[in-house]
Image (cartoon, rainbow, N blue to C red; front, side, top):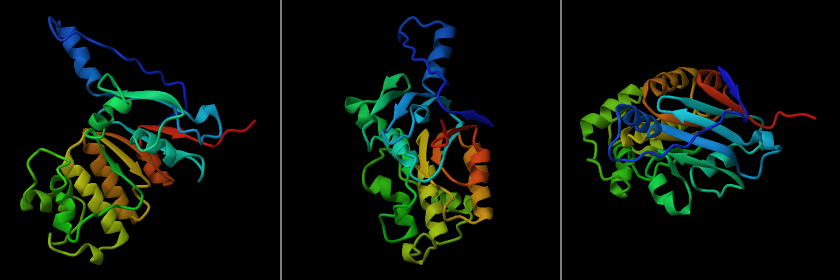
Amino acid sequence: MIIINLNHAGLLFTLQESGETADERQMKEYIDSVLTIRDLGSGLESSSRDRLAMRLQLGEHLAISGPSGCGKTSLLLVLAGLRAPVSGSFCWQGQPICAESLRWWRQQFCYLPQLPVMGADNVGQVLRLPWQLKALTSKQPDDGRCREILEQLDLHHDLDVPVEQLSGGEKQRLAIARAWLMERPIWLLDEPTSALDPVSRNRVIELLSALPRISISVSHDPVWLKSSHYRHDMGGHHG
C-alpha cells in the first residue's frame, strides 16, 4: 500500500510518429497506457493538500478516501468531465483533457455512480444499453457473452428477468458487468461496494484486479481501500 496525497509527479511526453526508434516506440506504448493527473481539485477540498497528483498505468487502482463531505465524489466528477476543475489538469495518452477533447475522453472511461443507472427494463437490455444508445461502435455482445459475464459476477439470472426484481447489490454488480462488456480502459467508481455483501465485494475485488484497466474509486470500505495499489486520503489534515 502506498499512501499518496500530492507529491506524485506526472510527466507528459510527445513523440514523432515517423522514424521512431525501438526506444521511442516503447515510450509511446507507455504513454498510451498512462493517465497523468496534476494538482487536480474541484474547489471543495478543505486544503490544497487534498488535490490529486498521480500517474496511473493500465492495471493500477487508485482509491480515494476520507470523511463524508470532503469532496471525494466531486473530484471523481471532475475526472468524469461532469464538473469543471478549479485547479490542475489531467491527460490521457498524452492528450490534455479539456473542453475540446471532452467528447473523445468520454469514450475512454466507464463511470459507475453509487446508485447504479439501469436505463432499461430487463437484465439483457441493461447490459446492451450502451450499444442501443450508440455509445459504442463495437459489436454488440451476444447472449452467450452476456451470460458469461453475469456468471463471473455470481449473477444467476436469465437475460429477460425484470430489473425491478433485482436487489440493490445485484443492480450494482449488473452495472459492473455492463462496464466490463464495454471494454473501456478506465473505470471511475463511486462507492462500488456500498450495496454488496462481503462475498460479492471480494469477488468484485478479485475480478477488478485481474482486468487491464485503470480504476479510480471513491470508497469508505476498508477492505476495498486495502486492495488498491494507491490511496489518496482527503480531509484528514490538521493544523
